[in-house]
Length: 129
Length: 107
Picture 1: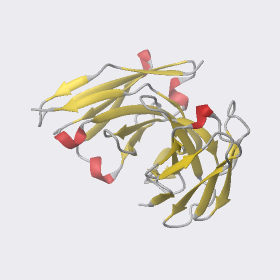
Picture 2: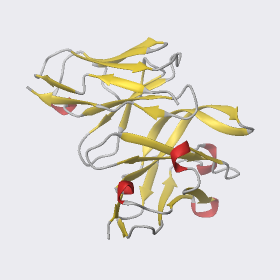
Picture 3: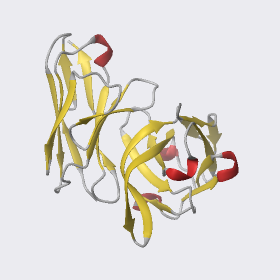
Picture 4: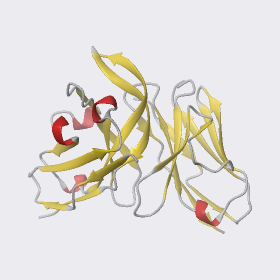
């Protein structure tokens, strides 16, 4: 069965960076984009960005550009999300989610235009001095 | 980016009620819309994709409709397990955006 298993909770000070992992199993890792979605305490869902594990192309929402880095290791079927220059407003649960749908070309790269059919369990990142 | 607006923000209902949640897009998104259910402390779960297609394993009491800018999620007979928060998400126009959520509470 498809599973996405994320790394454990993290605590960081303002200005630091955090890196969250997402290990995939039960499907061909390179066939589906991995998306990152976050949820601040008591708030809604916010899409952050995507990564194509087959080649490593990435894209992100404008508010995260310059701060968000998404990478992967295909040998261990794991995606990573690193967010830098953290502030208290980055305190949230961070989810990875598999994207499914049609592949389209945006700005010269292949992106999955679709919905998120499998999700990780979430990783709480707390930013506090 | 496309703004997704859900209404109501909170809905109080009883077991057995028919419940409808609306999601409006700031511009046309064809039928590129998904609905998710989220329970406290859990990851979201997809219910509906392509506006009206039921995800495998989702009970048939859930249904979706709409196209363009207005969409609805309907629960035909609310069950105890359905008390949760529901989100819509558009995937027509990069980048993907969610509605702010609708919490379905016990009346």
